[in-house]
Image (cartoon, helix red, strand yellow):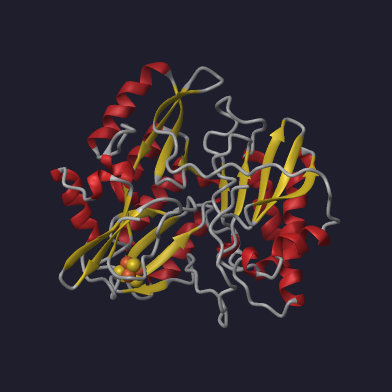
Length: 393
Ligand code: SF4
């Protein structure tokens, strides 16, 4: 059975997790860093415009896509949090101050729009988000908590969620706990309630174990004990799909005859101008955990122009592009620990065609902490005082 890499021993969690939020920002070397939760990765055009304006007027002019389909703003001046919070609230991006950091919800890309899945998980995203926000107890979830809602295409179930729903058929949904099948099943209409119950059970088990674990996998027998709290089930288990290394790229035909464009943003950077362009092209977009953006619902005669416009700004539609192989941490100037400007160096290597390790999937980092390292096989390109060290397995 596939499962995310789990710690060999439960790490010590003697402090509350410090995951940044929109209000609880992180003081980075280049200014405040705010993380905006985007459940299911879905943003409407007005929200894109609001984020673009905030990035331009309050931050460094860019939005960063995270591996959870969320967004970050960097370079915030001291005191900008209040203005940012007000703008986000006006745009519907901060519907709860108490629960904002726990709204980490990944959903299948293009669910309900293409034929790959068994169900349309978009209503699950709305209902799960609303359910999380409606329960005061769930404000106590760690900021690292992650829910995955997989329509059966197998794209997000393996991405390391604490609680997940995986559609097995149009009528049956499996509850996934810390990357393993719990054996518990629900009808699609009851699935969100089961996921919310699992989130509550995680918190209850954490209390009973006297633990301050940030992730369900860090609890002793966490998945089994949470499943038992929910009534348990002895049936056969399914294999949870491996997380894909990259998501879809290019054009995808939708069930309704329209087309979705999926473009990768190099190093996960979306400029304010690009965000404004996306807002002009579509009523809503979907951010993916692979640092790409889906522009759906394009009429046939609009696809080519949209693709050209986005391509000219640097959006990548070629699945063979080296940009799909490269990720980085923040590096200089954003991180005080960084020994190099890893983004600039990785960008130069892509443009010059000189990526190390024959262009294999690689993660560039500014120090040994290796923040943001993706799951799976990846070459580490680690900055040292004397240059980069290439670590191939
Ligand atoms: S890997 Fe090091 S340099 Fe990069 S963001 Fe993490 S702490 Fe900073």
